[in-house]
Image (tube, rainbow, N blue to C red; front, side, top):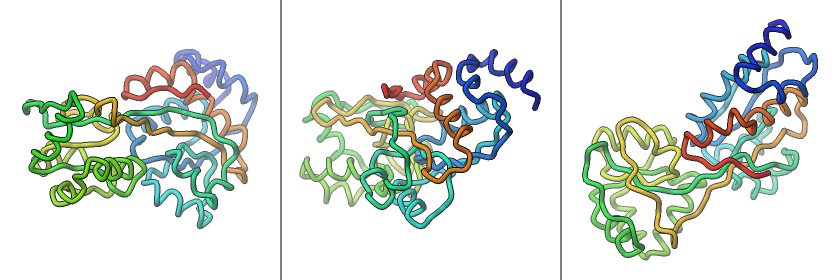
Length: 254
């Protein structure tokens, strides 16, 4: 793609300031590691970056344990947009440059579209609704799932919830499980719950609410440093921020 066409496309998308830092960089293939719950968001942003920059973006979406394993075992990548829990692993952390906050998101509860919405407005009502549900679904083996499991323990309902949990191995399974009637409630981060076929009941009560943070960072050994920097600049640009907010997330401040 000629640079004149790139600049024209960038102007339409509001990305000219981002791409100006790339100068005359040649097209590259960027390998991105990303949290599975960012699939909808980054699947929308990546093609816009490709259109404007000429670079190709290949994203590996996965759960936090699998992302840590991939980094620790030397899977090549250029950029990570991952749950902050990945950086809590000392072996994985050394493979990233210092991160900046990309986005954060809170937790909520959802039901199938048109179903009655239970009361989760207070801590007491929230606990009662969880116990009354015939089944719930979420992704236990993830950063978000770890918090949910700890919350169940905090509420003293972990045994009861374990018996009624329809566990998923990727975030993409959560919404279909509710839509198809396999689970009565979905309990997870809000951006995953904003989807056709289900309605968000509301956020966790303030007493139990927590935000999952997603930093972005370069791989320390990336050979595509300038293109990788441009990708991070793009996903934090004003144009991308509009999409981040529309997906139910809060743009990072860093």
